[in-house]
Image (cartoon, rainbow over all chains, first blue to last red; front, side):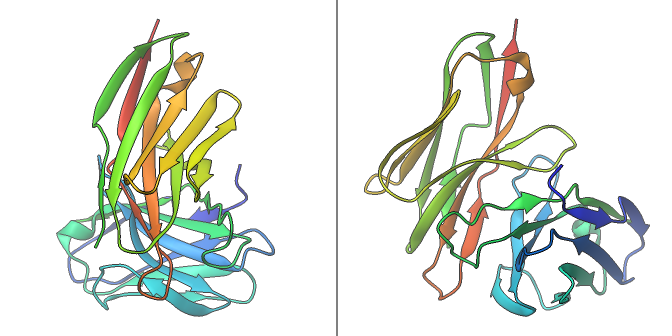
Length: 116
Length: 112
């Protein structure tokens, strides 16, 4: 148990639709990162938020956007879904600021998104 | 960008020792992480190296050589429950923010 929860667990959408995935971190975890993990691959960094501001972004198009809220929850929004967006979406939180001495990340269980 | 290489799959015997290698190329190295991921589960943190040398934590140790762009994870006294994917991740700070890049993972199979 990492204390990080994600909802929903599974989701099925069709191409062109929009989706919002949610993550709830532990109290005091001001840094949250989102990852996309395709089957058989390592997680790919989407973006990171620190104290409600985007703090770094990976190689993902603008239709991937996010929000972080003061209550340690966050959202990943994906617009205009494509078939290749089918993956496991992981959020990870950390009590350390970005680039901190350990920056240990605690991952949530993930949301499995299927785009048909 | 970054490039991280690790073997796709390894097998080992229960009770043995296994070393999983990771090589990387990055312009703004800011730390290397190892994670364990069981099938269908989220990754869990194993180790962090930012300076050269060996970090030991129980049965697991991780080594880093920044000049060689090389790390390894050493697992001793292997147990069946160690069968999992092991992910090497490098954090880069060259762009002013901290961007982690994960390798594809090494699937370790421990057999009796």
